[in-house]
Length: 157
Image 1 (cartoon, one colour):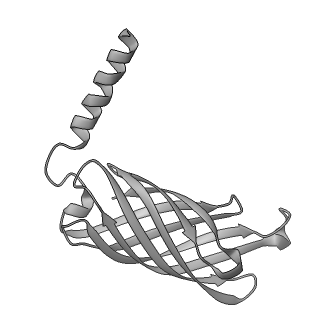
Image 2: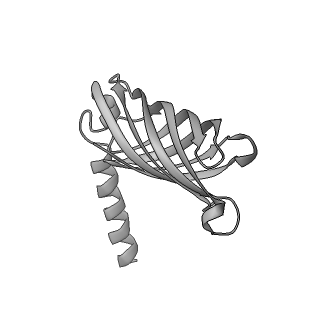
């Protein structure tokens, strides 16, 4: 019982701090906002991106960015690795003006497969949680025959 009370008090304290204060979420501060994100799809593609744009002060963010990734299509050998730079536009809505806030995110991306020499387009809707300067997300990368679940870890500055 004692452990339960200590745990309940800790959770209550964290929740109180998470939802206290004005404009503690970066998307509720009007102006420039940026982040860096590392994503992985089904453990066969890693992608690092940087997004830069404008936060409108009401939780809405619109921006764009670039990224670079590596994708393993079969066995892990040099011939099966595809190097994939990308350009994208990004819309994001952070729901709560709090240190911990759920969000929805949508990226429209043009991938350029340097190994195969052909462009590919994608759309990635995702949901996640902003926790201070760190964000975690889960989404679905829609890229033709390479569509897959995606998880991401981001850091804003």
